[in-house]
Image 1 (cartoon, one colour):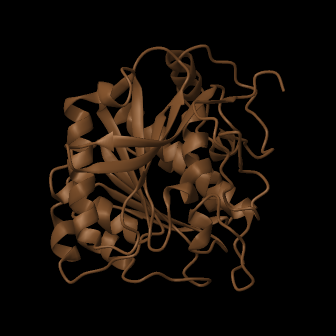
Image 2: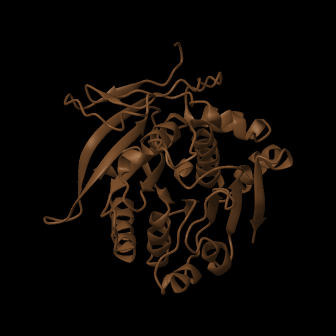
Length: 317
């Protein structure tokens, strides 16, 4: 399709991931995107994209479609924090020249970086580089948070270790489930991040409220429908973060919908439609934070969805 963002490859070894998800697979090392459609927006640069978005009404549906930029995928790239500490990552680089934000994804319990593969790809197609991390997936989550802070500050000091086009002043953290607790710990521990987006977060550990009270960066919580599935101590995040936090829930969404890809199981009502809804809200939030340092644009973009009941439980302080 003309104008469709294309995934280029840096690895030739085939890898089979989540066979039940037809829209995402590795074929000779390449990620193939689902057929969600591509935006009609023509943008040759990040400035073109930003100008278009600011001159039009903030619209969440715009971000349901893949963005205007090609994406280069680097699977299983090791990040060397030291001679003994290495982190396995997947890197998604947006095509435009010039510096761009970096969105770092952290998985939740019993999950992996692959669970956020399409989210990272989608965000990169909208002009933001993405890095999906693989950390111990059963915790300890405070330890993962401290490792995440170390990763962020390492990249902040030397962004060229990822790519020379990384804007280290615009690093955005994204965490799902208990991974959101780790993101909060990272912010409390001084991670040089512009802010965070929490995907249906789950709170763990008696010290979590203390960490949340120390978060000073902007945070947006994108929640599932608590009437369908609820997570442990989700209310802590809005309650204990002192200011600069916004929250909204997605009607009928499950905890698993906050991942993409998620392998459908017999006991979960997770759907691709709701996963795409999470992706669109995530992308709007990341663009908003990376552009202005705030979530004002993202908040405006969910207005119609709130009015029609697709989103609910909107609050901010």
